[in-house]
Amino acid sequence: MSIPTRWARPVVLAGCVLLVAGCSDDPGPTPTPVVRPSNPLDELTDPTSEEFIAQTVRTVLDEEGEGSATFTVAREEGLERVTYYVACSPASTFKLSMDERWFSGECATSFQNSGGIPAEGTGDLRVDLALPDGVAYRVVGVPEYS
Image (cartoon, rainbow, N blue to C red):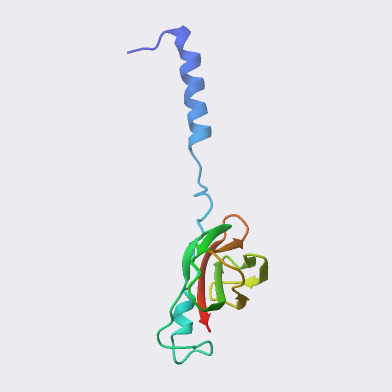
């Protein structure tokens, strides 16, 4: 079967475009595996860890996600302060605020920073975690009571 002359040029051109656009020896970029941040509770409850505080730790916040986020912590009777532990991946800087008070620092796959914030005032507590887009986080809030 032969191709009519008026179609020969477009068919040959289309074949060349497909060859040029669709074929390559380059496999493309290698995807970087996503490393999730560790759970700070793993270190806080491990008796062999330098960060150990108790084998059982009660939390008022235990969240994971990506980028900046806002949470609500219910104010319980006698709540004096909340200590927050932040891990993130890839390594970055963060700012965590609870109502009007805040702390900031560097974070990595295992938590490097923690900060205690007094639970002043009345009503539920607003917690804001500021991170760059695309940075995964795990944040844990451990309460202290009077």
